[in-house]
Length: 291
Image 1: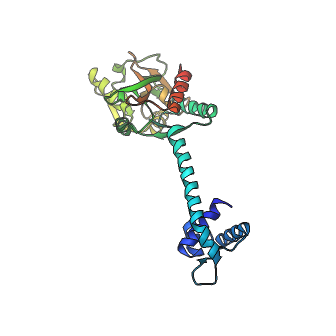
Image 2: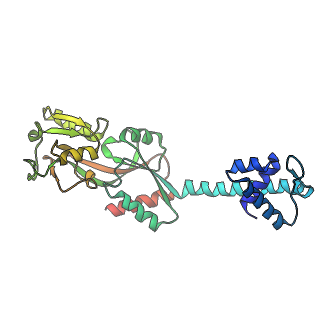
Image 3: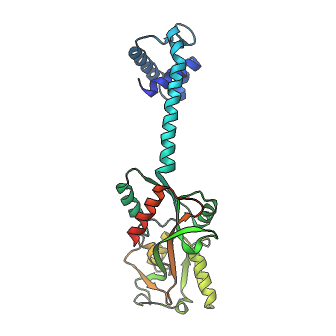
């Protein structure tokens, strides 16, 4: 006896049709018929009277039907409970900016799940404008974001990485060999910045205002587009130094800004409830890796 055979039996008993059951489960009518005949052979009795326009239960089929339906319901309840336990206790819902690869967090996820085989980390990437809403809603176990973008509230906060603003230029650029660079030297540079909704964009514009600089911003784009334009010597850009490691090529030079402008990457947990054991284990693993 299989659960599929039970499902087909209950379905046919209720709708009186092999074809309707085949459509319900998206299989062929012949497959349904073969499964029911195998089920009857195993049970040692005929469950359906096929001599009518609509398939009807035999006497023994009618007797067994409520018990089989109850058995199937109990099985589904057990499976739902098991899945619910796994999702609520043995999974960690991690929401992150699209930076997991740049800061080596993807590797941490792989190592953790290999070490803790009973725990699964479900990752969802969101842009900064969505992350703030998620944090306020509390619909997460862990959020990985930039510390400066956190909305007001009480959080358990764990620093996992530090990054600093830098000028990205082509290898043949006049500043390519500089060890550091001040914002005053960037004033006339054609710059392509991150999209206007990002923390990096707002950080750059704030620094320009503080230093009374009117920058030459030619456009805004995502990292991949920015880097391809730097490679072709069309522009330079201000980005976080480590955040583009996985995209960079040898044709691009990175020059730290002086004085340094630092941004912290943090893991955040809600402070209004005790975290699940799976969440606590992942946080310990994550912080130990980056320490």
